[in-house]
Length: 280
Image 1 (cartoon, helix red, strand yellow):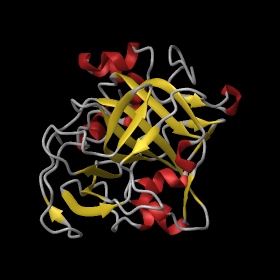
Image 2 (cartoon, rainbow, N blue to C red):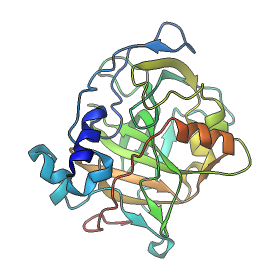
Image 3 (tube, one colour):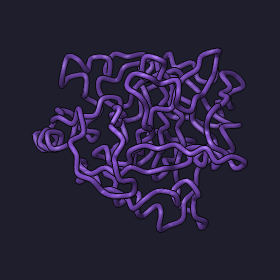
């Protein structure tokens, strides 16, 4: 890694498996910016700008280099769309309901993020997704900019990741939604408070939001690609099923500018397809 990139890596907070969706305690005053110390935000030795060589930096990142199902990968309509592993959702709010969730809105050092409030070690009270007879639970979401995944060679402005865990809190599945600007406001982004910048990682806000608005924006994942993948930052652990929506979630120009202004580069280099079993 070049010395300049090592210096850059040392300046950013550590994040295992993208954003650390730890069980942040509920904040006493919703909607107010509060200064706090987020757990696990220590100095790291890697940077997205040098993701080709993560496996050479640290022995614990070896899977980044030798893994057979590393993420992200290139996707295309030539691969078809999945007819298997169909996800179903429970406990999410939709246009006919009013069940919102509470959580902490913050910046994971690269872009906006949100962690749902829950009792320590208890995950099955959170909104859930079931596929292949396995149920996983929405721990939180975060944003990468630009998008991790390319589709037909095109990379969107950003990508939203809904991270789901099993009953022990281990990452098991990610819903990936590409984001691009258009004309109309996005109901999902319109509900968020003012963005918290990538250099304000000590700031959190307690907020109430409707997580299903993002799903509705991409037709509730009626069309998607799926594959066996990994975390997209060190240590790059595998065993994560990715669902990538075919549809794009569009924002208006102002919403996208606010999102990009709160973000910094966080796309891992595209990985070669190997044993990912795309749509299989």
